[in-house]
Length: 498
Image (cartoon, rainbow, N blue to C red):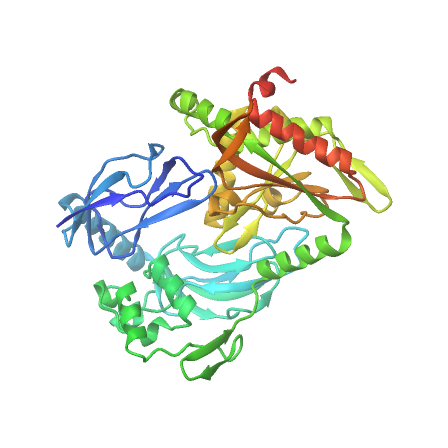
């Protein structure tokens, strides 16, 4: 049966999206809930997964294409077989792997923690993706190591297998500490293809789809306790749901990391420790509330001029620059101009001194699977609209993939956060220390407005500026917000500098 693969329903404030990455090719066999394609909006990346086991028969929209909500982007054949080309490619790969393993001398290699940035003292073992004796290929991710803000991947140095794990999940480790021993060229007696179904359904195995892993985490279940009906004994989403409906599910807890669930009939609780990133976010939010005289001022902006401008020039902009024209580039350019006119907002307090910055590095709040981070877009005054869009896209992809470096996250004089992509109508954002202000953008919503004595329905958005009253007075804060409003309501001002 042929199934249409469609773009998901987009948030109300998002007009269109872009095909970011196809993870499968036509003719390639996939399993249910496997990620097929990443679709990128102004700020979030959406995953589209396989509706069943089968084959992508045709890709209708290529990477970089602009697409609309519920647009058909591919054709999917349920239960279809892989194309001869894909199967023929697999055979040489397998024979090559056997050749590599047979020619290897089984060298023992130490797996170490990578060198950590100067400002990071230690790290935590987050997730082991392989177990001792499990065959892996060169550059396959072995373990995730989490610092205060970034997650580092440690990959296999060659084809082989882990012989011993020396640091368990949750352990604190230092730079270049040995955390495992690796046997190059060594493989277990049974390969992945011939291993028992129960082994291939391990909860940390990469074969589990993202939706299955999320469901297991939410319900506190161990994949080893669920019978998999997918290919090779893999656990599918339906297997997890049947397991829950059968009443045999009991939240799994670790004696080391989690306290036992408190059972009250059908009512249960689960206690898990905070991740290092969540602890850091919590501490910084408390620091901002307790160490600044924070105040928030509001305004609203008519987004119709920008929406009309995007509609008029979207196609030619994308054709010339190779990237979609979004709202964030307008926000960044308007904020940059406002920072030039109100240097107090671009300043910070250092002890008893006020430091005025003559450069414009803007932090962009990005939501990632592990929490909120604020990577920095540098020298925004020197970037054009296309440069801003490309910079934000690069940071968003890095955040999604856990590839942000410490350099990406350090610095920044001012922060922009856009809760509108999640449907937020109004909020009071919290300052990102040591910065002195943060601008919150919100949902664009049609509202009746009085224009020249008449009522018109216009797409309006609330702006919220939270600022440190120790350095920024009410006059400067309101003037800054009004400048941003004027720039957005009349984008021509950005070109004429008026």
